[in-house]
Amino acid sequence: MERIPILKMGSFLLVTVQVDMHDQLAMNLQSDLTDKIVSAKARGVLIDISALDIVDSFIGRMLGNIASMSRILDAETVVVGMQPAVAITLVELGLALTGVRTALNIEKGMDLLRASIG
Amino acid sequence: MTGKGEILPLRASEDVVIVRQRVRALAAQEGLKLVDQTKIVTAASELARNTVIYGRDGTALLEAVEAGGRRGVRLTFEDRGPGIADLQLAMKDGYTTGGGLGLGLSGSKRLCNEFEIESKVGVGTRVTITRWR
Ligand SMILES: Nc1ncnc2c1ncn2[C@@H]1O[C@H](COP(=O)(O)OP(=O)(O)OP(=O)(O)O)[C@@H](O)[C@H]1O
Ligand SMILES: [Mg+2]
Image (cartoon, rainbow over all chains, first blue to last red):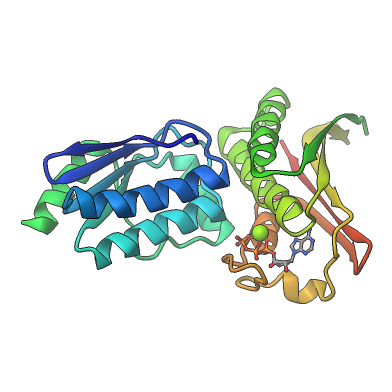
């Protein structure tokens, strides 16, 4: 089954979404990340969505689920690199992404993670 | 109005990805700005997923349209699924019977210039959206 790779960098996990995900792929990512946070004892998760040219309600829900699930497992999630057109569209769609922390790029996302983990 | 259309099947979640990609290509070809392309592709993703999940099997028709010198993209999603009993309710933000966010119909209406929905219980559902350049 196709899967999106999860990289471990110190106590962080990095996911770069590079394909136009169908729903099952997004669901797999959600469960793979849950397992990996536990097995790698990760404290932070960085999800780079700069290659995504849309975020719809399904992907939005997945990002929200990952954020709340990681929080329960004592890890912070930061979503980075959302394209401006995607952000504008999300707002009009009505998706608030409450509880999902975002940053402009990977570097800023890392800073945010380091600061919040201390 | 011109209508040179492409019909795509909607049976599985992979078909939703293909519809997104074809709508993107058409919207770019018709000269929609990037943000307007993003809006119609996002709306298409929502409606295509509804067709697969609730309609169970259906089609998407993608057309380039022209009216009064304006060009645009028109998409029609059609299925012979269970239909929607209360359209007003289904169009409300947050209303879902499938454990979703209930944003697909109401949100895609906001993302387009024109939105039309017809549905009959036991017959099926048809949603048509248009985004002008
Ligand atoms: N093609 C369809 N056939 C039958 N029922 C439909 C169809 N499309 C939508 N519905 C009904 O309308 C409701 C609202 O749809 P909408 O797309 O707004 O939300 P959702 O699919 O439940 O959640 P979301 O799209 O936010 O993930 C659905 O839960 C379903 O009951
Ligand atoms: Mg929906």
